[in-house]
Length: 632
Ligand code: COA
Ligand code: AMP
Image (cartoon, rainbow, N blue to C red; front, side):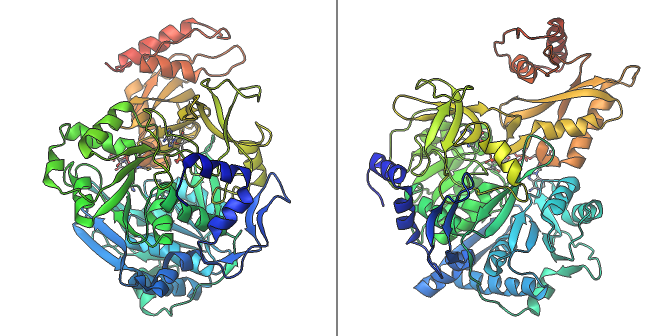
């Protein structure tokens, strides 16, 4: 399908059904669809209704049948444990079929939910694929979340089983998963019948008799099971992502559209084919991990690298270059923050000189805007194209990208290039009308969204509509502000809601505020994302204490920091809060978080006309300066 970007884009725009019907010929169907695009329940659109597929079959079995059984499917590289392992497609098939047998033996079948709470080990991928094999719906929860977050997800998707591991490993510490898992099940109203636990040598977990099974014991007595055909529209997974409150949104992904779209992206966006080594340095707990560590490379018959380590410190800033050269990685996908971490420790790229990167062709960055410094450093040091691309958990693949497999466009600094074929992108003003090219507004996508994007939220059809479709009639609201220039290049500026992006991780400031508000001495609070040289943004809390509270501020701020770590998890990276006398508000009582952020970042700001009491901002400026903001 390579050719000219403009003509491919136009053909997907003019005839989406024809375009995506042709793309769907590239995957295996047990039964072809009755309708390519089903609009009978618009604005809830469905792709390939009537079709029957199996995601695991397309990811694994098909390649073994086509002679790729001996090719590496997964290269597990774990500098944090000093181990590694390569699974061929044939081995992956054997283990996946067996674990599917474990699940089936526990009475888990089509439509049942299974939570996967695991570190970056091959068994996490095997568990995901095994669910897909039997039509069960997996929901992977990132290991950096605390019990409470896991409990919320257990209650929302009511899993029959949880697959977990005894521990994850972070630099300098072993994160015991089992106490977090037991704590979550204790807190949740819904109780899963089984937990299957992978014991890792770094820490053995105690198993609860009658509920917990050892992964290896269960595998040793299981019988392999085959793929079952499921409806193209059946959910493959639920992935929770931050919403504007503490209640996360369960993004649903279907089977048919997901296989078609992701396989298409491997060729057309990333320019990779079967047998190529593709590495997404992310985590299976995030959408990048779902799409580009697990599913897309496997649909494509490529080899995926599963890296359990960090860009720096495992053991040094040459870690990424070692992996690329050792495994012959052709395309790397990661977040700009990883490159900022490497650049900070090895500004001159000395570690690069130790490795042969001759097979490396292209670097893709996403998760946050690629800042010009990082872009130029990576371009200079790696001497390959560095492509920023923009997407969201909801979309599952990129809305805007330089589609290397179609036509490599000129790279413009600060832009993730142009809309990808399938995405009818627009910029609308607050009044719902179009803005002049080059003006900033809300980035919206004209419905229907292409295959592979989310059809709904789990058990929350109305929330789906309210959160994404209600603001601009006929459009999906990305909640990103941005613009499109006169050459059609997209620029993504900031979120229009309270989501912040910390080290490529998406966090809700509203959820952090809910935790702070629970502290006995806190009367009122606000959280905003301030600039952070490494992580892009970092959350900063503002606390107003109850009248009469005379405890030292440092004690209270330390307590709220610990509360966020305990309730949301270390991933929230909430390290700093400041006590203030009052919060700045409008006359109608809305907290002026944006102004506080600008003061903290040292940006120009204007006194809002609607402010209740302008003097509060002097107090905020003073309080921020007492903790070192704006940063020098
Ligand atoms: N399990 C348990 N804890 C975890 C975890 C996991 N899977 N992942 C992260 N954490 C912990 C970290 O150890 C850290 O804990 P600490 O406060 O005790 O130091 C905390 O959560 C914050 O993690 P993070 O924000 O990732 O910061 P970091 O300092 O550990 O690492 C980077 C910073 C930039 C090196 C790292 O974020 C990174 O490699 N990011 C790029 C790739 C990526 O993950 N992108 C995501 C989407 S593409
Ligand atoms: P997540 O759902 O975790 O993938 O986060 C999605 C959000 O991250 C988007 O809505 C953007 O705000 C931000 N984001 C992701 N990729 C980019 C990018 N390339 N440029 C700017 N922002 C991005």
